[in-house]
Length: 127
Image 1: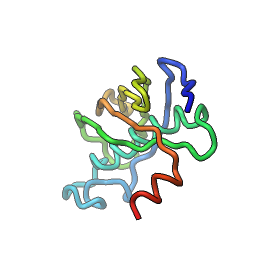
Image 2 (image 1 turned 90 degrees about the vertical axis):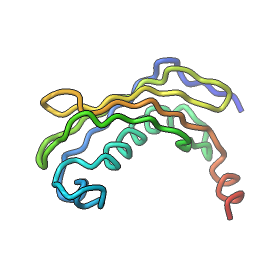
Image 3 (image 1 turned 180 degrees about the vertical axis):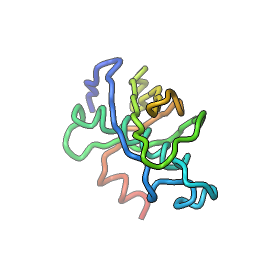
């Protein structure tokens, strides 16, 4: 499998904090602020979407590691924007840095590794 993803490929995604993505809704806390698990999901989404168009049909990436710092709370109604950068490729491993911001500034950062797999073979292996 040939991998033709540009180094430093960038990604961007955003979400508005609402009742469905708070710590209280996720069960990860008791306060109505943007949940850490929701931020992690947004970070992974940003990374995977940034490179998916460079992969052939049936080939996808799966997250295998993420190291996250949730720096600041974001209340309901605020927008969160997430930015990923592909730092390096080692075989089928893709290494990203990711940052998340609300209108007040940086709320989170992460290093993230995704692995390239054949979707059908991957699912067959885990059945």
